[in-house]
Length: 430
Image: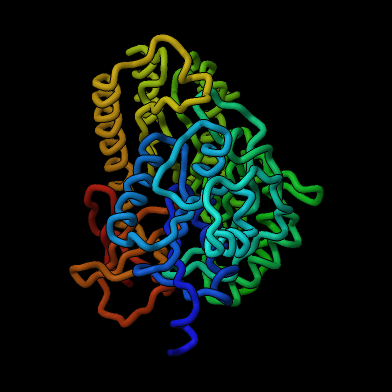
C-alpha cells in the first residue's frame, strides 16, 4: 500500500461567492500535506456552504443528501456561512457529522482531526482569526486567482445575513496582500481579482483600495488586476484615477445596485440613493469611457410596487450592464426584511425577474453591438466544444475566439470582434 492510500481522502465542495472559493483553496492548501485531496470517493467531504439565499442553502442540503446516498460511510463536514447560521439558530441541518462556522476555516486541520476521532455535532462559535493568517498560493483550474483582502461587514442591510454570519468588517494588512500576490504571480497567474465581503470597507491601517491597487500594479509579471465587487460608496476620484492610468487595471466595475428605487433602497438600508449610484457610474465613465459595469439586483423586495420595479428597469436601461446577477427576493430568517409586511407574491417575483432579464439582455445586446469591429485584448481560458478558444476581455466580456494559432490557457491575444450571441462576443485573432 502506498503512502497516498494510507492518508485520509478529503474532497472539498464549494457553494457561494468568490470569498468562499478563496477560502476553499486556503483550506485545501492547509490539508494537502497530511491528506490526499480528491474530487470523489472521499473519506471526508468538506462542504463550504452559503446562506445568502434559500436557494444557496437548498443546494448544500441536496449535496449532503446525495453524498449520504452515494457514500454512506463517508464523514461530512459543513463549514462556513451555513455553519454560522446553524450555530446561531438561523438554520438547521441533518445528515451531517460536524458543523463549523467561518472562523474554523483557518483551523481546518483540527476540524478534520476531530471528525476522524469520532466527534460529531456543532463546534462552538469562535472569534475570527487575524486575516494575515489567510493566504493561498494557487487557484486550481483557473487563470485568474481570487485574493481575499477583506471580510465581514459593518452595515446591516435588512435582507442580508452577512453581518450575522461573517461578523464586523476587518482588512488584511497591505504587506500580507502584496506577499500573497507575489506568490500567485510567481506561480503563473496572470490575473488577480481582489475580493471581500464588502470591499468598499477595506480599511487597514496602511492603505485604501486605491493605494492597494497602485501597490499591486508594481508587481512585475502581473498582467491584469480587477475588483470582484465594490459597493458604490467605495468608489471615489482616487480609485477611478488609478484605474484610468493603468492598462493592467481592468476597467470593469461590479457595483451592487439591488434596486433602482429610492424607497426600496431605504427599506433595504443600503445607504445610498439612485442618484448617488448613477453619479458613481458617471464618475467612472468620465475618466474611463470604455469601462463596463456589472451589478446585483433583487426583484420582489417587500413593498416593491409596480412603479418601484419600473424604476429598477430604467436603471438597467440607463447603465447598460455587461453582466447582471438577478435574484428574486428570498426571505431569510433572522433578517428585518423577513418580518416586513407587504411581501410580494412569488408569481409576481417570477414575472418581474423575467421582465428584468429581458430588459437586461436587450441592453446587453446593444452594448455588445458597439464592440463589433473593435480590437479587444482577450485572456484565453479554455477551448470550446466547437474548437474555438474562450476568454474574457479587460472589460470582463465573455469572448469566443477563432484562431489558427496554437495556444495554452493564459495566453493573451488581440481579437477583432466580428459578431455577438446572447451573452458573449465572437471574433478572430489578429
